Length: 81
Image (cartoon, rainbow, N blue to C red):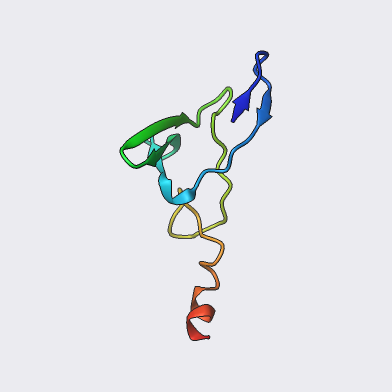
């Protein structure tokens, strides 16, 4: 997310999901995300009042933090064909 001098959002960036890991608090809620490329890593806050990252995901009954990938629900049918 890129902001201007007033703090308003002016640009959004899509991050590669395989490079993002969740940092949960003691209760299991995400407080930050870590984006890693090679040996470099950046911590992105997920806490209020203005989170640095917004996660858009689909529902997965076994994985609350990462969700289900776009083709995950169709994986069985794709494997058959």
